[in-house]
Image (cartoon, rainbow, N blue to C red):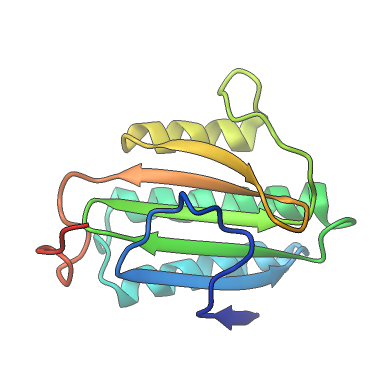
Length: 160
């Protein structure tokens, strides 16, 4: 697994930036689902994001579902998927990018079971799901979680 601290070309300018940010790539193979989940959990723990909360469980499930979709549906067109996590004072955003240009539906009625779960979890936390094209082909799926209370003990006083 490769870690990157630089900006990815798979990020539209609309990505809310926060003081905490992690970007990493995983190959589009089944073992990567677990790798992405563990890496996400490690980042959230490092940042002390709502430890042991339902929010963390929801974020981990979202990452699992999105990476699973990349593995299942794009492995022949996208050798890897990129995961982006950003946390601010009142939001947490997860993005998963791949090189497949197919834009999946993000409405609950049109999405498959995994994306329906993702949409439901985002809505539960006052957020939503967006899909955006990336510069060199492909797409990124963003899942936004809005959180009224401070997400971490470190950023309780941050203003975005």
